[in-house]
Every structure is written in structure tokens, then in C-alpha cells.
Image (cartoon, rainbow, N blue to C red; front, side, top):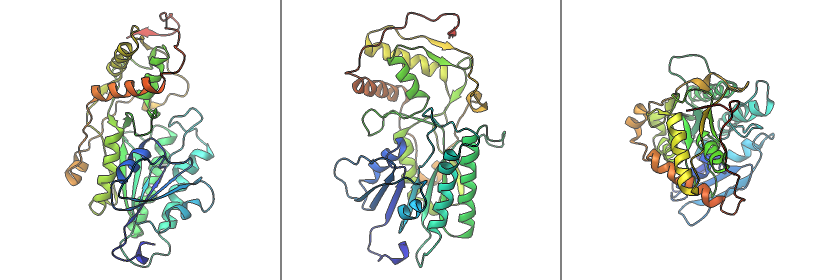
Length: 343
């Protein structure tokens, strides 16, 4: 563990989920730091260009027995970005889904056990954990994903109280934007609507468009994780909301996406429609979300930099490049009464 290294040795920072949407952006920033950087992910993590970091690139299924202990052995800090990707490719996890429970909760249990054993000296390792924004003092978690994230938070908090690690929980709102991996727009609502727009499909909502989301650019999210790493002592033992603090009505966001895509393609903007929600919709889908990051900003000095309109332009442009050789889809000819209501 870290206690066995010499004072002059570079700290070992391990990123779990390094090939993911946020993970790849975190790795890109850490490449410029004089650290030993270990990337761990299920699929190979693309690490391009030169940097100061000494690289240790690993592939592993962290749900396998003993995989977490091997991945974090000797780590001075761990950035924990592992989460379950459902069959639909988004954050939704069904009740009783063992894969979701394992990825979202058991990996955290294994991490705490691994970091808390065999340490001989030095400060406890820092763990920076990616969670999700919850309503302050409001209703209980709205879905399985939120309940599992909250369970992991509690595991880390207990480990902090026991002195086995310095745990920092960053609660994120909707993350969007074009990351360092070509064509990777993430799996959030912005990416989904950009893909629909380029496919000439209507952009659909399950409400009247006034529901708001705090949209945090992936680059700003990555910088927040590094800020948390730099201020782990001051942040440990608590959760911190990290976002822009602004609520953007999804109707306005979708219409902006449709307009930008129309300019790129030379086609009329696709319609933005209100449709009936599916059976899988939860309370989260009808709840406006804003993340008050004032406390996190006051401790770390972090602040978001992205401008929404400019960032949406970049997302559309990046997707246009990645689909340049795809067949041109047939333009949508207009909604029927069954498809939804124009907004």
C-alpha cells in the first residue's frame, strides 16, 4: 500500500471505469500530472498523446471475485466511476437486477475492504466517488439507481468514520458534451436527442417541456473530480453537489438541438413532441433538478466553464463528423396524432 513507498515516489492514482464517458475525460486530465496513473476498465482504455503520468493500463471485470483488490492494490487515491449500464444503455436499473446491484454497490464494498486492509503507514487513501444528485430534504430516492448510489455513499461514509479511507462523494446532475473519445457523446438525454435528430426522428418528451435539468459538461465534471482529489482532506466524509446551478427547460434544450442539427444537415428541424410516458418512467423523469455547488466551489475554487449553446454546437458537430459516412436517413414527414403533441 501507499505506506510502503518512499516519500519521493509518485502517488498512485487509480481510475475505475476509466474507459467510460466521464472516466476517459478524467484520465485525459490526469495524464498531465506527475503521478503513477492506473486505468482500470472492462474494455481497453484509449490513452493518447504524451504526458507526465506513468501509465499502467489494465482491463478487468470488477464484478469478478478478487478483481477490485487487484485493481486498487497500492493506490494512494481511487476515482470510482464504475456504474451499471442497463440493457437499454442508460442508468435505469430494474429492482432485483443482480448485475446492477453488484456494479453499483458490491464493487464499493470490495473497494472499502481492499483499501482498509494491510496498510502500514501514511494517510488513508482518498476515494472520490461519482454519485447522483438527490432532492435536498425531499422525497426518498425515486428509483433503484438512486437507492444503490445512496447505499454506496453510506458504505464510504462508514469507512471514513472508521478511518480506513478519505471518502468524497460528488453528486452529479445530467452530464453531457463531447468527450476525448471520438464519437462518444455519453448516454444522457442530450446525446439521445442528438442521435434522434440526426436520424430524422422527432425529439420526444414525457411532459410539457418545462421540467428542468442542470446540465453539466463532461469536461467540467472531470475537472471537479481532480479538484476533489486535490482537496480530499477538506472534503472527506461528506457528499457534495456539483453542477452549474442552472435549470434548463428540456423543451427549450430540445428545440435548440433540433435547430442546430437542421443547420448542419440543411434539413428542416425535426419536431419536438409531447408523448405519453412509458411504463418504466419514474418520479425522477418528472422532477426538475438543480445542483447547488456553492459549498463545493467555496472549498475547491472549482467552477463550470462550458456555455450550453456553444457546447451543444460542439456535440452536434462531433456527431456529424462521426456519422459522415452513414447512409442519409429518410426525413421525418410529420407527426401523426398517435405520435404526440407539438411543443
